[in-house]
Amino acid sequence: MTSNEEPILSYLTDMDGVLVHENHMVPGADKFLAELRDNEIPFLVLTNNSIYTARDLQARLLHTGLDIPIESIWTSALATATFLGEQRPNGTAYVVGESGLTTALHEIGYVLTDSDPDYVVLGETRTYSFEAITTAIRLISAGARFIATNPDATGPSREGILPATGSVAALITRATGKEPYYVGKPNPLMMRSALRRINAHSQSTVMIGDRMDTDVISGLEAGLRTILVTTGISTQSTVEQYPYRPTAILHSVADLVGKTKDPFAA
Image (tube, rainbow, N blue to C red; front, side, top):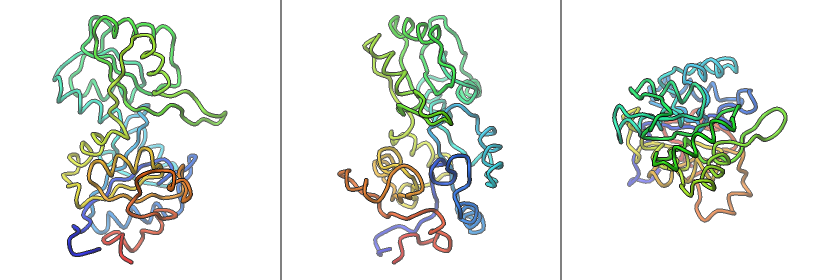
């Protein structure tokens, strides 16, 4: 760390591909998080997945061996609810999504309705219905503002890839001519809302991710230093395909154990 760089005081970290991979803990992730807690370094675990509530995700992570407090989990659903609460307090929305999204909107005082809503909010779901998509299309065509939790086109399953929020949003856009505003990564808005959540500053925070096209770019655009780990999607070789680079590339978060206060030390 050079003299003109701020010390690292807090961390944002992606979940899938960084802390867990295919429902198993990434080796060393528990030691990394334990060191953050022992050193009283604030952190937030981020995910673009809007299906689950923070409580659901806490239980799923605990099953892998990671004990993470609910307040340390930040989803695209929570970021979307925070955004809408700031833009139009106590508004109305028609939601295509699961409990992670509906619960987040209820908690900010939103009324969920299909009668002239302020917004149509599209999130992740394993059961997209033609009826719900048709309703969304009609409401957007009638003037509802179109919001989507994240632009991910596909998601994983045991049987293979599944169409995700971005793919369904493309269908709705094709039918309405209206593009959604995406709140989740790679929108740096999600990084900024996460920073506010833990009262952190971009200059003294590191973003750890496994994807160049979401984690690294959103961290970079939000003014954070970034670490790419190769336990998920992006690899050392794919980094060269992008016009931007992370601050550092590591094999996994296990490489940060013993270095959380100065992760870029030589």
